[in-house]
Image (cartoon, rainbow, N blue to C red; front, top):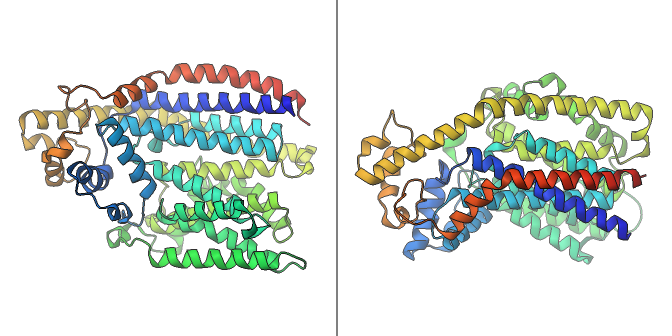
Length: 476
Protein backbone atom coordinates (compact mmCIF):
# COMPACT_ATOMS: atom_id res chain seq x y z
CA UNK A 1 0.00 0.00 0.00
CA UNK A 2 2.87 2.38 0.78
CA UNK A 3 4.41 1.60 -2.60
CA UNK A 4 1.08 2.15 -4.34
CA UNK A 5 0.62 5.54 -2.64
CA UNK A 6 4.13 6.56 -3.74
CA UNK A 7 3.42 5.56 -7.33
CA UNK A 8 0.07 7.34 -7.28
CA UNK A 9 1.64 10.52 -5.92
CA UNK A 10 4.38 10.44 -8.55
CA UNK A 11 1.86 9.80 -11.32
CA UNK A 12 -0.41 12.67 -10.25
CA UNK A 13 2.42 15.16 -9.73
CA UNK A 14 4.09 14.35 -13.05
CA UNK A 15 0.79 14.41 -14.95
CA UNK A 16 -0.07 17.80 -13.44
CA UNK A 17 3.27 19.28 -14.47
CA UNK A 18 3.11 17.81 -17.96
CA UNK A 19 -0.44 18.79 -18.90
CA UNK A 20 -0.14 22.21 -17.27
CA UNK A 21 3.16 22.73 -19.10
CA UNK A 22 1.61 21.89 -22.48
CA UNK A 23 -1.33 24.22 -21.85
CA UNK A 24 0.99 26.98 -20.60
CA UNK A 25 3.12 26.63 -23.74
CA UNK A 26 0.02 27.03 -25.92
CA UNK A 27 -0.94 30.16 -23.98
CA UNK A 28 2.57 31.59 -24.28
CA UNK A 29 2.97 30.80 -27.97
CA UNK A 30 -0.50 31.53 -29.30
CA UNK A 31 -2.45 33.41 -26.61
CA UNK A 32 -3.04 37.04 -25.70
CA UNK A 33 -3.79 39.12 -22.63
CA UNK A 34 -6.59 40.95 -24.50
CA UNK A 35 -10.18 39.78 -23.80
CA UNK A 36 -12.06 38.31 -26.73
CA UNK A 37 -15.59 38.36 -28.22
CA UNK A 38 -18.46 37.66 -25.76
CA UNK A 39 -16.11 38.39 -22.88
CA UNK A 40 -16.31 42.12 -23.56
CA UNK A 41 -20.04 42.55 -23.12
CA UNK A 42 -20.81 39.88 -20.52
CA UNK A 43 -17.74 39.98 -18.34
CA UNK A 44 -16.41 43.47 -18.95
CA UNK A 45 -19.47 45.68 -19.26
CA UNK A 46 -21.91 43.74 -17.06
CA UNK A 47 -19.60 42.58 -14.24
CA UNK A 48 -16.13 44.11 -14.03
CA UNK A 49 -16.97 47.73 -14.80
CA UNK A 50 -19.90 47.90 -12.34
CA UNK A 51 -17.72 46.19 -9.72
CA UNK A 52 -15.09 48.90 -10.13
CA UNK A 53 -17.76 51.61 -10.02
CA UNK A 54 -19.41 50.15 -6.91
CA UNK A 55 -22.73 49.50 -8.66
CA UNK A 56 -22.56 45.74 -9.20
CA UNK A 57 -25.61 43.80 -8.07
CA UNK A 58 -24.89 40.17 -7.32
CA UNK A 59 -28.04 39.21 -9.20
CA UNK A 60 -26.19 40.25 -12.39
CA UNK A 61 -24.08 37.09 -12.04
CA UNK A 62 -27.21 35.00 -12.60
CA UNK A 63 -28.45 36.85 -15.69
CA UNK A 64 -28.43 34.31 -18.56
CA UNK A 65 -25.73 34.54 -21.21
CA UNK A 66 -27.69 33.31 -24.24
CA UNK A 67 -29.03 29.94 -22.99
CA UNK A 68 -26.48 29.70 -20.19
CA UNK A 69 -25.92 30.84 -16.66
CA UNK A 70 -22.17 30.95 -16.06
CA UNK A 71 -21.97 32.02 -12.42
CA UNK A 72 -18.73 30.21 -11.42
CA UNK A 73 -16.90 31.60 -14.46
CA UNK A 74 -18.00 35.15 -13.73
CA UNK A 75 -17.10 34.81 -10.05
CA UNK A 76 -13.68 33.40 -10.87
CA UNK A 77 -12.84 36.12 -13.41
CA UNK A 78 -14.17 38.86 -11.14
CA UNK A 79 -11.92 37.59 -8.37
CA UNK A 80 -8.92 37.45 -10.70
CA UNK A 81 -9.54 41.00 -11.94
CA UNK A 82 -9.82 42.30 -8.37
CA UNK A 83 -6.63 40.47 -7.41
CA UNK A 84 -4.75 41.56 -10.51
CA UNK A 85 -6.02 45.10 -10.84
CA UNK A 86 -5.99 44.50 -14.60
CA UNK A 87 -8.40 42.70 -16.90
CA UNK A 88 -5.84 40.27 -18.23
CA UNK A 89 -7.08 37.30 -20.27
CA UNK A 90 -3.70 35.57 -19.91
CA UNK A 91 -4.12 35.47 -16.13
CA UNK A 92 -7.54 33.89 -16.65
CA UNK A 93 -6.14 31.36 -19.13
CA UNK A 94 -3.33 30.23 -16.83
CA UNK A 95 -5.69 29.82 -13.87
CA UNK A 96 -8.17 27.98 -16.10
CA UNK A 97 -5.36 25.67 -17.21
CA UNK A 98 -4.55 24.90 -13.57
CA UNK A 99 -8.24 24.26 -12.88
CA UNK A 100 -8.67 21.87 -15.80
CA UNK A 101 -5.36 20.12 -15.18
CA UNK A 102 -6.27 19.61 -11.53
CA UNK A 103 -9.56 18.03 -12.54
CA UNK A 104 -7.80 15.68 -15.00
CA UNK A 105 -5.34 14.63 -12.30
CA UNK A 106 -8.16 13.94 -9.82
CA UNK A 107 -9.89 11.81 -12.43
CA UNK A 108 -6.67 9.88 -13.04
CA UNK A 109 -6.17 9.33 -9.32
CA UNK A 110 -9.73 8.05 -9.01
CA UNK A 111 -9.15 5.56 -11.84
CA UNK A 112 -5.83 4.47 -10.30
CA UNK A 113 -7.49 3.66 -6.97
CA UNK A 114 -10.88 2.34 -8.09
CA UNK A 115 -9.81 0.40 -11.21
CA UNK A 116 -6.10 -0.40 -11.13
CA UNK A 117 -2.69 1.29 -11.43
CA UNK A 118 -2.56 0.04 -15.02
CA UNK A 119 -5.86 1.78 -15.81
CA UNK A 120 -4.55 4.93 -14.14
CA UNK A 121 -1.45 4.91 -16.33
CA UNK A 122 -3.46 4.43 -19.50
CA UNK A 123 -5.82 7.24 -18.48
CA UNK A 124 -2.87 9.54 -17.78
CA UNK A 125 -1.13 8.90 -21.08
CA UNK A 126 -4.36 9.12 -23.07
CA UNK A 127 -5.20 12.50 -21.54
CA UNK A 128 -1.67 13.74 -22.15
CA UNK A 129 -1.68 12.63 -25.79
CA UNK A 130 -4.97 14.39 -26.51
CA UNK A 131 -3.72 17.51 -24.71
CA UNK A 132 -0.52 17.59 -26.78
CA UNK A 133 -2.66 17.37 -29.92
CA UNK A 134 -4.22 20.70 -28.82
CA UNK A 135 -7.70 19.44 -29.69
CA UNK A 136 -9.22 21.81 -27.12
CA UNK A 137 -7.17 24.89 -28.02
CA UNK A 138 -10.20 27.20 -27.97
CA UNK A 139 -10.85 26.62 -24.27
CA UNK A 140 -7.14 26.77 -23.45
CA UNK A 141 -6.67 30.15 -25.15
CA UNK A 142 -9.96 31.70 -23.97
CA UNK A 143 -10.13 33.30 -20.54
CA UNK A 144 -13.92 33.11 -20.70
CA UNK A 145 -14.03 29.34 -21.27
CA UNK A 146 -13.72 27.97 -17.72
CA UNK A 147 -17.48 27.36 -17.93
CA UNK A 148 -16.71 24.07 -19.71
CA UNK A 149 -14.34 22.99 -16.95
CA UNK A 150 -16.88 23.83 -14.26
CA UNK A 151 -19.60 22.00 -16.18
CA UNK A 152 -17.52 18.83 -16.49
CA UNK A 153 -16.16 18.87 -12.94
CA UNK A 154 -19.48 19.58 -11.23
CA UNK A 155 -21.42 17.17 -13.45
CA UNK A 156 -19.09 14.22 -12.83
CA UNK A 157 -19.15 15.06 -9.12
CA UNK A 158 -22.95 14.85 -9.30
CA UNK A 159 -22.82 11.44 -10.98
CA UNK A 160 -20.29 10.15 -8.46
CA UNK A 161 -22.33 11.36 -5.48
CA UNK A 162 -25.94 10.79 -6.49
CA UNK A 163 -25.26 7.23 -7.66
CA UNK A 164 -24.06 6.18 -4.22
CA UNK A 165 -26.35 3.20 -3.41
CA UNK A 166 -26.68 4.41 0.17
CA UNK A 167 -28.53 7.49 -1.05
CA UNK A 168 -29.10 10.54 1.16
CA UNK A 169 -27.80 8.71 4.20
CA UNK A 170 -24.25 9.61 3.17
CA UNK A 171 -22.33 12.83 2.74
CA UNK A 172 -21.24 11.68 -0.73
CA UNK A 173 -24.85 11.84 -1.97
CA UNK A 174 -25.23 15.42 -0.71
CA UNK A 175 -21.92 16.43 -2.28
CA UNK A 176 -23.28 15.06 -5.54
CA UNK A 177 -26.49 17.07 -5.17
CA UNK A 178 -24.53 20.27 -4.55
CA UNK A 179 -22.27 19.48 -7.49
CA UNK A 180 -25.27 19.01 -9.75
CA UNK A 181 -26.78 22.27 -8.56
CA UNK A 182 -23.56 24.10 -9.35
CA UNK A 183 -23.49 22.44 -12.78
CA UNK A 184 -26.90 23.97 -13.59
CA UNK A 185 -25.49 27.46 -13.08
CA UNK A 186 -22.24 26.70 -14.92
CA UNK A 187 -23.79 26.18 -18.37
CA UNK A 188 -27.24 25.73 -19.84
CA UNK A 189 -26.74 21.99 -20.26
CA UNK A 190 -25.75 21.55 -16.62
CA UNK A 191 -29.14 20.12 -15.69
CA UNK A 192 -28.44 17.07 -17.87
CA UNK A 193 -26.25 15.49 -15.18
CA UNK A 194 -29.40 14.61 -13.24
CA UNK A 195 -30.96 12.57 -16.06
CA UNK A 196 -28.57 9.58 -15.98
CA UNK A 197 -28.85 9.54 -12.19
CA UNK A 198 -32.62 9.52 -12.40
CA UNK A 199 -32.58 6.77 -15.03
CA UNK A 200 -30.30 4.49 -13.05
CA UNK A 201 -32.21 5.17 -9.84
CA UNK A 202 -35.37 4.15 -11.68
CA UNK A 203 -33.73 0.88 -12.77
CA UNK A 204 -32.76 0.19 -9.16
CA UNK A 205 -36.42 0.47 -8.20
CA UNK A 206 -37.15 -2.48 -10.46
CA UNK A 207 -34.75 -4.72 -8.57
CA UNK A 208 -35.98 -6.72 -5.59
CA UNK A 209 -34.36 -6.13 -2.24
CA UNK A 210 -33.48 -3.27 0.06
CA UNK A 211 -32.64 0.25 -1.01
CA UNK A 212 -35.78 0.99 -2.99
CA UNK A 213 -36.67 3.89 -0.71
CA UNK A 214 -33.26 5.49 -1.18
CA UNK A 215 -33.51 5.02 -4.93
CA UNK A 216 -36.94 6.62 -4.93
CA UNK A 217 -35.57 9.65 -3.09
CA UNK A 218 -32.76 9.98 -5.64
CA UNK A 219 -35.17 9.66 -8.55
CA UNK A 220 -37.63 12.24 -7.18
CA UNK A 221 -34.85 14.66 -6.22
CA UNK A 222 -33.27 14.50 -9.68
CA UNK A 223 -36.66 14.95 -11.36
CA UNK A 224 -37.46 17.97 -9.19
CA UNK A 225 -34.12 19.66 -9.87
CA UNK A 226 -34.42 19.06 -13.63
CA UNK A 227 -37.92 20.54 -13.65
CA UNK A 228 -36.82 23.61 -11.67
CA UNK A 229 -33.75 24.14 -13.86
CA UNK A 230 -35.80 23.78 -17.04
CA UNK A 231 -38.44 26.26 -15.92
CA UNK A 232 -35.77 28.84 -15.03
CA UNK A 233 -33.51 28.20 -18.04
CA UNK A 234 -32.14 30.99 -20.18
CA UNK A 235 -33.96 31.63 -23.46
CA UNK A 236 -32.20 33.24 -26.43
CA UNK A 237 -34.49 33.79 -29.46
CA UNK A 238 -31.54 35.22 -31.42
CA UNK A 239 -29.88 31.79 -31.31
CA UNK A 240 -32.76 30.03 -33.04
CA UNK A 241 -31.04 30.45 -36.40
CA UNK A 242 -28.38 28.01 -35.13
CA UNK A 243 -30.88 25.28 -34.17
CA UNK A 244 -31.14 22.07 -36.17
CA UNK A 245 -34.16 22.41 -38.46
CA UNK A 246 -34.55 18.74 -39.44
CA UNK A 247 -33.87 15.23 -38.21
CA UNK A 248 -31.16 14.98 -40.86
CA UNK A 249 -29.33 18.05 -39.52
CA UNK A 250 -29.55 16.74 -35.97
CA UNK A 251 -28.38 13.23 -36.86
CA UNK A 252 -25.48 14.42 -39.00
CA UNK A 253 -24.21 16.85 -36.37
CA UNK A 254 -24.64 14.11 -33.72
CA UNK A 255 -22.56 11.70 -35.80
CA UNK A 256 -19.83 14.31 -36.26
CA UNK A 257 -19.65 14.70 -32.49
CA UNK A 258 -19.53 10.94 -31.91
CA UNK A 259 -16.64 10.60 -34.37
CA UNK A 260 -14.45 13.05 -32.41
CA UNK A 261 -11.48 13.54 -32.50
CA UNK A 262 -11.96 13.07 -36.26
CA UNK A 263 -15.34 14.69 -36.80
CA UNK A 264 -15.05 14.19 -40.54
CA UNK A 265 -14.74 10.41 -40.22
CA UNK A 266 -18.46 9.95 -39.68
CA UNK A 267 -18.41 6.28 -40.69
CA UNK A 268 -16.18 5.53 -37.67
CA UNK A 269 -18.48 7.23 -35.15
CA UNK A 270 -19.93 3.92 -33.95
CA UNK A 271 -16.45 2.45 -33.56
CA UNK A 272 -15.43 5.23 -31.17
CA UNK A 273 -18.42 4.48 -28.92
CA UNK A 274 -18.58 0.71 -29.38
CA UNK A 275 -17.06 -0.16 -25.95
CA UNK A 276 -19.66 1.88 -24.05
CA UNK A 277 -22.51 0.60 -26.22
CA UNK A 278 -21.43 -2.97 -25.56
CA UNK A 279 -21.36 -2.29 -21.81
CA UNK A 280 -24.81 -0.70 -21.94
CA UNK A 281 -26.32 -3.67 -23.78
CA UNK A 282 -24.70 -6.25 -21.47
CA UNK A 283 -25.02 -4.55 -18.10
CA UNK A 284 -27.85 -2.00 -18.09
CA UNK A 285 -30.18 -2.91 -15.24
CA UNK A 286 -27.79 -5.43 -13.65
CA UNK A 287 -24.60 -3.44 -13.31
CA UNK A 288 -22.23 -2.98 -10.40
CA UNK A 289 -21.83 0.51 -8.84
CA UNK A 290 -18.60 1.00 -10.81
CA UNK A 291 -20.32 0.02 -14.04
CA UNK A 292 -23.23 2.31 -13.22
CA UNK A 293 -20.86 5.23 -12.99
CA UNK A 294 -19.38 4.38 -16.39
CA UNK A 295 -22.85 4.07 -17.90
CA UNK A 296 -23.93 7.37 -16.34
CA UNK A 297 -20.81 9.24 -17.48
CA UNK A 298 -21.17 7.95 -21.03
CA UNK A 299 -24.88 8.76 -21.00
CA UNK A 300 -24.09 12.27 -19.77
CA UNK A 301 -21.69 12.85 -22.68
CA UNK A 302 -24.30 11.57 -25.15
CA UNK A 303 -26.91 13.91 -23.64
CA UNK A 304 -24.48 16.82 -24.00
CA UNK A 305 -23.96 15.83 -27.64
CA UNK A 306 -27.72 15.64 -28.19
CA UNK A 307 -28.18 19.11 -26.69
CA UNK A 308 -25.52 20.75 -28.84
CA UNK A 309 -26.75 18.83 -31.89
CA UNK A 310 -30.10 20.52 -31.51
CA UNK A 311 -29.08 23.98 -30.33
CA UNK A 312 -26.10 24.35 -32.71
CA UNK A 313 -26.88 21.74 -35.34
CA UNK A 314 -28.00 23.95 -38.23
CA UNK A 315 -27.20 22.32 -41.60
CA UNK A 316 -25.66 19.33 -39.82
CA UNK A 317 -22.28 21.03 -39.49
CA UNK A 318 -19.23 20.22 -37.43
CA UNK A 319 -18.91 20.86 -33.68
CA UNK A 320 -16.90 23.85 -32.49
CA UNK A 321 -13.53 23.18 -30.87
CA UNK A 322 -14.84 24.40 -27.50
CA UNK A 323 -16.83 21.16 -27.07
CA UNK A 324 -13.68 19.03 -27.27
CA UNK A 325 -13.25 18.77 -23.50
CA UNK A 326 -16.70 17.20 -23.19
CA UNK A 327 -15.91 14.75 -25.99
CA UNK A 328 -12.66 13.88 -24.20
CA UNK A 329 -14.71 12.57 -21.27
CA UNK A 330 -16.46 10.25 -23.72
CA UNK A 331 -13.12 8.92 -24.96
CA UNK A 332 -11.98 8.25 -21.39
CA UNK A 333 -15.24 6.48 -20.55
CA UNK A 334 -14.88 4.19 -23.55
CA UNK A 335 -11.24 3.52 -22.66
CA UNK A 336 -12.18 2.53 -19.10
CA UNK A 337 -14.68 -0.03 -20.38
CA UNK A 338 -11.71 -2.13 -21.47
CA UNK A 339 -10.61 -2.33 -17.82
CA UNK A 340 -14.03 -3.21 -16.47
CA UNK A 341 -14.02 -6.89 -17.29
CA UNK A 342 -11.17 -9.44 -17.42
CA UNK A 343 -12.40 -10.54 -20.85
CA UNK A 344 -11.16 -7.22 -22.21
CA UNK A 345 -7.61 -8.60 -21.90
CA UNK A 346 -8.34 -11.77 -23.83
CA UNK A 347 -6.84 -12.04 -27.28
CA UNK A 348 -10.03 -10.81 -28.97
CA UNK A 349 -10.36 -8.04 -26.41
CA UNK A 350 -6.81 -6.84 -27.01
CA UNK A 351 -7.35 -6.79 -30.77
CA UNK A 352 -10.58 -4.80 -30.39
CA UNK A 353 -8.87 -2.42 -28.00
CA UNK A 354 -6.01 -1.83 -30.42
CA UNK A 355 -8.44 -1.12 -33.26
CA UNK A 356 -10.29 1.36 -31.07
CA UNK A 357 -7.01 3.02 -30.09
CA UNK A 358 -5.96 3.29 -33.75
CA UNK A 359 -9.22 5.09 -34.58
CA UNK A 360 -8.79 7.57 -31.70
CA UNK A 361 -5.07 8.10 -32.36
CA UNK A 362 -5.60 8.57 -36.09
CA UNK A 363 -8.27 11.17 -35.52
CA UNK A 364 -6.19 12.99 -32.90
CA UNK A 365 -3.10 13.11 -35.11
CA UNK A 366 -5.05 14.30 -38.14
CA UNK A 367 -6.98 16.99 -36.28
CA UNK A 368 -4.05 18.02 -34.09
CA UNK A 369 -1.66 18.40 -37.01
CA UNK A 370 -4.11 20.72 -38.73
CA UNK A 371 -4.39 22.83 -35.58
CA UNK A 372 -0.63 23.11 -35.01
CA UNK A 373 0.19 23.84 -38.65
CA UNK A 374 -2.56 26.28 -39.55
CA UNK A 375 -5.17 27.22 -36.97
CA UNK A 376 -2.99 28.12 -34.01
CA UNK A 377 -0.52 30.33 -35.92
CA UNK A 378 -3.44 32.18 -37.51
CA UNK A 379 -5.03 32.69 -34.08
CA UNK A 380 -1.77 34.17 -32.78
CA UNK A 381 -1.49 36.51 -35.77
CA UNK A 382 -5.08 37.62 -35.41
CA UNK A 383 -4.55 38.41 -31.72
CA UNK A 384 -1.58 40.63 -32.52
CA UNK A 385 -3.75 42.56 -35.01
CA UNK A 386 -6.46 42.98 -32.38
CA UNK A 387 -3.93 44.32 -29.90
CA UNK A 388 -2.49 46.81 -32.38
CA UNK A 389 -5.87 48.21 -33.44
CA UNK A 390 -7.23 48.59 -29.91
CA UNK A 391 -3.95 50.16 -28.75
CA UNK A 392 -4.04 52.69 -31.60
CA UNK A 393 -7.63 53.65 -30.78
CA UNK A 394 -6.78 54.15 -27.11
CA UNK A 395 -3.82 56.30 -28.13
CA UNK A 396 -5.42 58.60 -30.73
CA UNK A 397 -9.18 58.10 -30.33
CA UNK A 398 -9.72 57.47 -34.04
CA UNK A 399 -12.80 55.23 -34.32
CA UNK A 400 -11.74 54.28 -37.84
CA UNK A 401 -9.15 52.08 -36.17
CA UNK A 402 -12.00 49.91 -34.86
CA UNK A 403 -13.98 49.85 -38.10
CA UNK A 404 -13.67 47.51 -41.11
CA UNK A 405 -11.36 46.53 -42.66
CA UNK A 406 -9.57 46.67 -39.31
CA UNK A 407 -10.03 43.58 -37.16
CA UNK A 408 -11.08 43.99 -33.53
CA UNK A 409 -11.84 41.55 -30.67
CA UNK A 410 -15.57 42.45 -30.51
CA UNK A 411 -17.73 42.61 -33.66
CA UNK A 412 -19.98 45.62 -32.86
CA UNK A 413 -17.92 48.79 -33.33
CA UNK A 414 -20.17 51.26 -31.50
CA UNK A 415 -20.55 48.91 -28.56
CA UNK A 416 -16.81 48.25 -28.40
CA UNK A 417 -16.10 52.00 -28.54
CA UNK A 418 -18.51 52.59 -25.68
CA UNK A 419 -16.75 49.98 -23.56
CA UNK A 420 -13.28 51.28 -24.38
CA UNK A 421 -14.39 54.81 -23.50
CA UNK A 422 -15.77 53.75 -20.13
CA UNK A 423 -13.16 55.00 -17.63
CA UNK A 424 -13.49 52.10 -15.18
CA UNK A 425 -13.03 49.54 -17.93
CA UNK A 426 -10.28 51.42 -19.76
CA UNK A 427 -8.27 51.63 -16.55
CA UNK A 428 -8.29 47.82 -16.29
CA UNK A 429 -7.13 47.00 -19.81
CA UNK A 430 -3.93 44.93 -20.09
CA UNK A 431 -0.47 46.15 -21.05
CA UNK A 432 -0.67 44.87 -24.63
CA UNK A 433 -3.01 47.78 -25.44
CA UNK A 434 -1.80 50.17 -22.72
CA UNK A 435 2.00 49.83 -22.72
CA UNK A 436 2.36 53.03 -20.72
CA UNK A 437 0.96 51.45 -17.52
CA UNK A 438 2.98 49.17 -15.24
CA UNK A 439 2.27 45.47 -15.44
CA UNK A 440 0.47 44.11 -12.39
CA UNK A 441 1.97 41.37 -10.25
CA UNK A 442 -0.65 38.86 -11.44
CA UNK A 443 -0.07 39.72 -15.09
CA UNK A 444 3.69 39.33 -14.71
CA UNK A 445 3.18 36.01 -12.91
CA UNK A 446 0.89 34.68 -15.65
CA UNK A 447 3.28 35.80 -18.40
CA UNK A 448 6.25 34.12 -16.72
CA UNK A 449 4.25 30.98 -15.90
CA UNK A 450 3.18 30.68 -19.53
CA UNK A 451 6.77 31.20 -20.71
CA UNK A 452 7.89 28.37 -18.41
CA UNK A 453 5.40 25.95 -19.98
CA UNK A 454 7.90 24.05 -22.14
CA UNK A 455 10.20 23.52 -19.15
CA UNK A 456 7.35 22.32 -16.94
CA UNK A 457 6.24 19.87 -19.63
CA UNK A 458 9.79 18.54 -20.05
CA UNK A 459 10.24 17.93 -16.31
CA UNK A 460 6.77 16.40 -16.10
CA UNK A 461 7.33 13.98 -18.98
CA UNK A 462 10.57 12.70 -17.45
CA UNK A 463 8.81 12.10 -14.11
CA UNK A 464 5.83 10.52 -15.86
CA UNK A 465 8.09 8.10 -17.73
CA UNK A 466 9.82 7.22 -14.46
CA UNK A 467 6.50 6.73 -12.69
CA UNK A 468 5.21 4.56 -15.50
CA UNK A 469 8.35 2.41 -15.45
CA UNK A 470 7.96 1.89 -11.70
CA UNK A 471 4.24 1.22 -11.78
CA UNK A 472 3.48 -0.85 -14.90
CA UNK A 473 5.57 -3.96 -14.08
CA UNK A 474 3.84 -4.17 -10.68
CA UNK A 475 0.31 -4.12 -12.11
CA UNK A 476 -1.77 -7.23 -12.46
